[in-house]
Amino acid sequence: LPTKLENERTLDEIFSELLKNNISINNDLLKTIEELSQIYYNIESFYKEGQIENKPIEKMNKKDILNWVKSEKTKKNINEDSFIPELFSIIRQANYLSDGYYPRKVQIIAVLLFLFSPKNKGLFTQIKTGEGKTTIVAILATINALKGKYVDILTSSEILAERDSKEKQQYYSMFNLTVTHANNANFHKYNVVYGDTLSFEGNLLRLLFREDPNKSNFERGHQCIIIDEVDSICIDNLS
Image 1 (cartoon, rainbow, N blue to C red):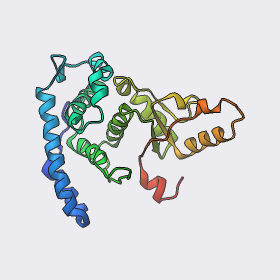
Image 2: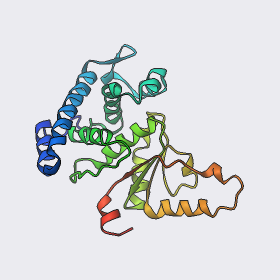
Image 3: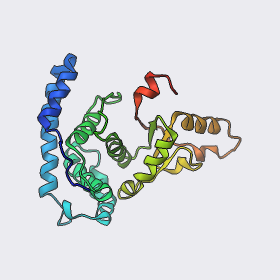
Image 4: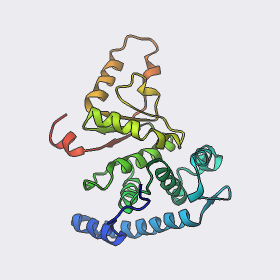
């Protein structure tokens, strides 16, 4: 598999499109773009020059990444903005080890936009077909799960949910994270759960009507939800 995808857009092209499609909030976006541009270059620089335990990041293997996740340094700094270049550099290497290519610029920028959106507010983004929503979702889920949150990924299809949870299992395991789909009876034990609306609704109803004094053991936090294919789920009223 190629380490670099052909016809990848430049940062200037990505930011230009952002401004063009968000005319009403250009003033806010201009400041955000300047910040994101600097953060992206910091990530690139750290990946090329940074080292973990005296080992270049591009030489790190799956075991190295797992040890990094478990280190006290990572646990202490995972919520700090200053840790973002190191965090994204590790994610970049993990994606290469699992899928054979590095995340595109547009994928990194998309995740950064989500991370720097106003606190306690959601964010809609339009990702073009072929630009890698699956990777964007997985990176965003990883970061939130590493911060101690349970992550639910809501998609339009039960088949897609099962497919993505299986295909991304190797990737998540490098971060000591567990992943499954909502049809798994033990889904509540996993860090990341993929599912369609009907599967999540079914699980909720089974929990609410469960006649078990220990049913609290089956509850799972609802701290982060990522909605894929939001148009078909929310706009088209298909679910």
